[in-house]
Length: 235
Image (cartoon, rainbow, N blue to C red; front, side, top):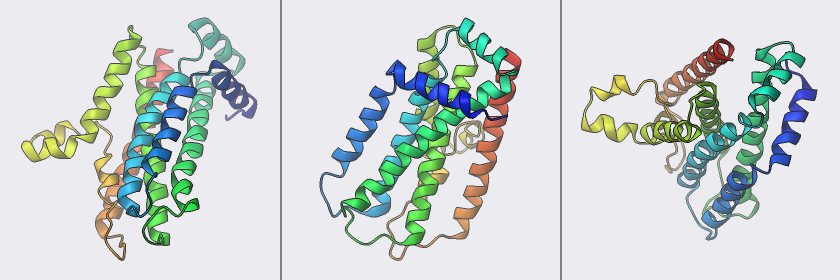
């Protein structure tokens, strides 16, 4: 199902397109500038870079899914003997980019000893989880709106940005009016991830973390499954 040759081809196409330069450069510059000063708290800093992963990976995913025109896309699908292999190849490229950017955001402050205190193993594990999940949320949003085949590319981008803004503001919206809680279920539950990026000493993972993680995992699996169904139906 996963063809390494297609993934390599997609990665080369993405690099040659140069569309990776704006999001990757912006993310790298943001991390470096953010950690200009040392002595910053661990989890509060990692929550910022996790949210940045969410934004940047949406951008990356929409670029990856728009590399080919319709004719080239159909030819690739025929060569791969199916739409599913094409979609998985696209996602694989996005996940590779997620891994690279996430590793950079996690390792950079550790290499230069930016944090005001040594990081605990449980903090590092929570930070890895947060960066990966936020990256997956970005890939999910970007690929979903690319799959919808919205006529206007600008409208697709605006729709993706709308989802990002609402998901980030979800907790505040629910506090204003609790009935919005159910209306916001379709939006990525990013608050259930960043909620646990606390700077308490020592850092403790409570029962609420595991319940929230279960819901996040269910959402991610269901979201990618729905996106796959839409892609197979529409393409």
